Length: 186
Image 1 (cartoon, rainbow, N blue to C red):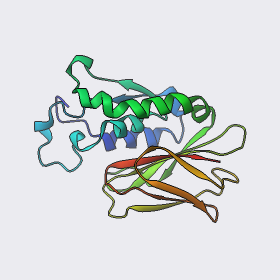
Image 2 (image 1 turned 45 degrees about the vertical axis):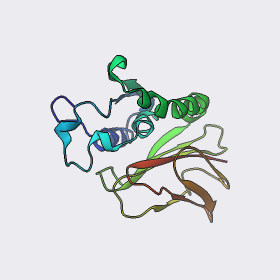
Image 3 (image 1 turned 60 degrees about the vertical axis):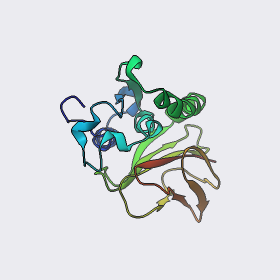
């Protein structure tokens, strides 16, 4: 942010593109202080400050998240907003990282629906982490065939939105732009 060169959607794009050939767990993906240098991004619809702290963490959580900030300079609400997501990730990460993590949706470009699916190693379910960038559509349908075999139930475990499995598809709704939903598939 010091040089007006950081955008969360670009970090997501880098991870999404690399995850096609590299196991995301081998990558360290940064989580930044979204309010630092906010004045440098004035008027930018994809400015870091427009993202919630838990969304910034979600961008990195299929990889190895790296907090790239001075903790002493974080606003107190930053940690408070991120804490529940980090706690949920700690509970689920071994199973999520134990599966095959694949990019889904469109390549992140700031306006797409994008994300990742982790197919459980035991063949029973997995996870979907879907991001609504600046897309005008609040709903997204992800065909599950070839990704998560036999999933019939979706439970939201993070983010803001709803999810259900119907006819071999995961149907999600994320009401706000630049937000996400994290779902356990069973």
